Structures are given as C-alpha cells and as structure tokens.
Length: 278
Image 1 (cartoon, helix red, strand yellow):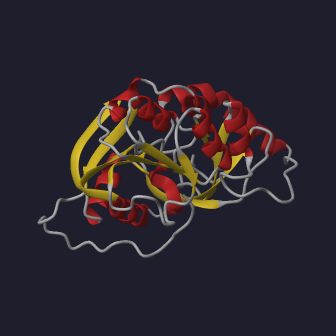
Image 2 (cartoon, rainbow, N blue to C red):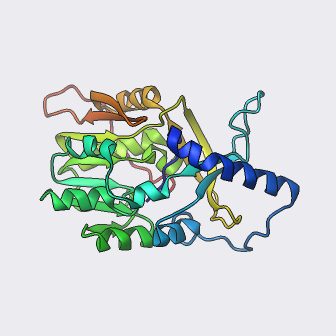
C-alpha cells in the first residue's frame, strides 16, 4: 500500500518491540551493510518483498525530525508496519469500515487489497489505487481491481465516488495532510464520505522516513505524516469536510467525514499541487 504507521496498535507493538530493540542495538553497535542504490519508496524496496511473502517484520525508519529533548520519538526510531494484517482477510475492525461503505468505493493506498477484494465479494464496485506494483498485483490476485497510480494523478471517476478509504495510517501520504484531504474532496461525490484511520495515539507531525527491513535493506527517503483523530478532524475542517462519525475498535480509531452537498456554504478551493507520493 501507500504506507501506514499511523501509530502501531498495542498488539503490533508487542509483536515487534523485541525485533526493533534487537535491530536498533545491532545498528548502534555495528553499521549495517546497506545497498548503494536503494529502491524507490513502496516500489522496489523491501515493502514489495514483504507483500510478495505476506509477512514482515517491516518498518518505517524515522529520519527526521529529531526527537524531543526527552528522547521520545527520536531520529532513527522504527515504526512497525503490520504486513501480516494487511495481507490477511479483513478483521472485525475492518468490517466496521466495510459496513459503512456506499459504492462505488475508492481505496487510496490499497496495499495488498484486502478491503477492495472484500467489497468486490459483497457486490460493491471498488477500485484500489497504489504506487506499488506488488500491491496492485496482489489485489488483483485476490479478485479485486486496482491501478498503479498516485492519488495526485488523474484517476477514474473523479467527483463520482460514493466512498473514499484512507486506511492503515495512509493519512500520511505525501507528508501534507492538508493537500491530501483537499485532493480527496475532489474525488468523492457531493454527499459522499471519506473513511479514514488516524493514529491511535497522540500524533501531529510531518517527517521524513524510509521503508526498512530487519536486515537493513531500505528504500529512498520520502515525506510522511502522522495524525491522531483530533489532528485529522482539525485538518478536515480546514479542507471543507463535515465530521459525521468517530469510533474505536480493537485499539484502532476511525473517522467518518462527508463532502458537503450542493447548497452547503463552501469556500474551500480544490487542490492544485502534487506533493510527494501516494
């Protein structure tokens, strides 16, 4: 997918903490031998390998900004990516999102396509969009439809989607949540909704990261963002979305937003830029 790390859930943190500690200790004691020419983010890097095998461990490594004075969330921190969950069937928390979807549905940063495939199996027209060839291929193998494209590129059905999904921390796409939510508002139909998954813990930051595995293989750095529900709702208000729902399930948080219908007072312009990756 186009990424996650909206904030690790407790179960994921527990599964990966020991791995991260061992890896951080090892890289401190002895520099890893890294490839001279790392691959593009989400495309040729270890993310593609993880999607092909369906398992991690896999991380986003924080490159900037540096941590706070107390050392929390410092440079070099590993943010675990839950590859196994993405490659599995939708879980109970995912089902709460699927039940709110009104077709047609566009899944931005669809990853290996668990939600696109589940919606298709329900008879709901759905399309995934992702930069990763491995993600698009796996989505199609699961019976879903997906295109390899940036969300900031021209997309099918602009302005006519009933629901847009922004799951698994994909509010971070491009490193500019304001530009991302503005862009998504041009994709959904008037009265349509955006279902987004913010970080489950306090977060409101823009940073530089790279995808990295436990062997030190990594892709090129790219901009990312992490927002909790409060920060996401604040950004949504600034881009003309109306909050219509908020809930928590299995330690994950979700927000439902709606694009105003015609006649609603609206002074928010559409996006014109193409920041970062999707």
